[in-house]
Length: 178
Image 1 (cartoon, rainbow, N blue to C red):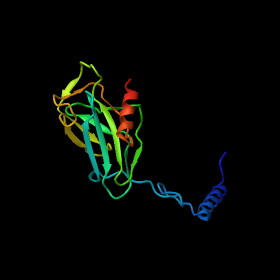
Image 2 (cartoon, rainbow, N blue to C red):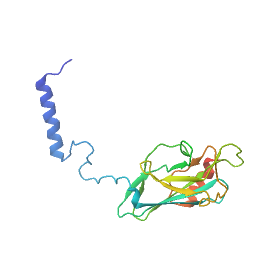
Image 3 (cartoon, helix red, strand yellow):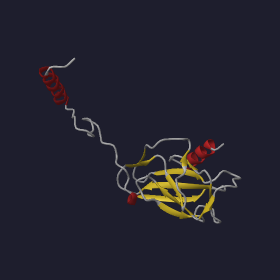
Image 4 (tube, rainbow, N blue to C red):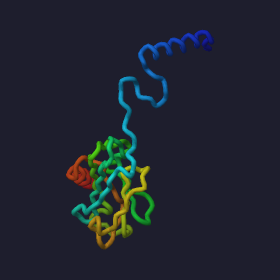
């Protein structure tokens, strides 16, 4: 069934009038009237990314701090890569990308397991890199910085999502790798 052009014009005019009367906008990507826009992706230079020993063989702790003056977002899954190897650590529990909001001065914490305890397979690398968001270049840390002075053994590496505390990140890693 074909709608007549007069009917289409009438429906279009009615819809436009309804939008105008409520103050709503039909512009793509615009926030509805009376709401605030979502924060943008954090600029890499406004973040401080750090890494340290996780207190166990093949475990590192990573952190991100928003040093900027406004709230922004990073991906909820940190991007952790290993020198000379393809790919990155898999998220545990399995997850898809999404926003992790950081207010000014706020921290996010994650834990990374580079290889399962007792693993005899894999590669040994001298550094790992951490990016708070996949759009960032990231920061590289040597094996000694993350408590793995003889090299970082890599076999099926995993990372937690960002958490609000180190303890929560440690618990998430322990729960996911049992």
